[in-house]
Length: 113
Length: 114
Image 1 (cartoon, helix red, strand yellow):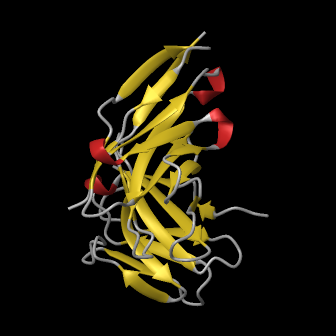
Image 2 (image 1 turned 180 degrees about the vertical axis):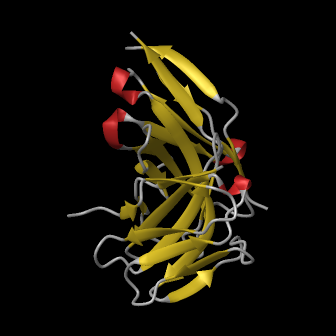
């Protein structure tokens, strides 16, 4: 069974440029999460989806970050415009239920110059 | 507010030696507790979890952890470390309400020397 797939694995952009990350969760997993992991830190939740609905986006900086999960399957996280402080690894995870085990993708490492 | 403290940023052990990684949490109620491992350039993999019942839980790769309510701790142990255990280890807490939002500690980096 395929795991959580993320792309791109690495992205280098200049500040003020836009960037997007894509995540395909494990088949059948209704709950999808985006986490941000800063260097030397643990992951921090940005947004959680139950199917198509964003049920917890309280930590998402909405002035520049947006996310969507239109068909309740794969998801896109966008940053526009990117700032230097956005350099981090963006992790996607999915679970079969809202209380189930989280399975993480390998992450997308963003470097903003 | 919930928080997770991993007091050791970096630990170095010899291969074959025992290991204990510390985790303390602050939470309004008894949370779900997890340990994850992250190898360089990889995502997080679940080692073990505590929901209820026996306070000593067994995980993958020979790891175990003990929940101590009185100390608000959930320390991870392994009796004999292998070189392949070198990685970053994260303790996390989650709510029992059914919303599986995990709060992670800052991690402990484990170096294994031959």
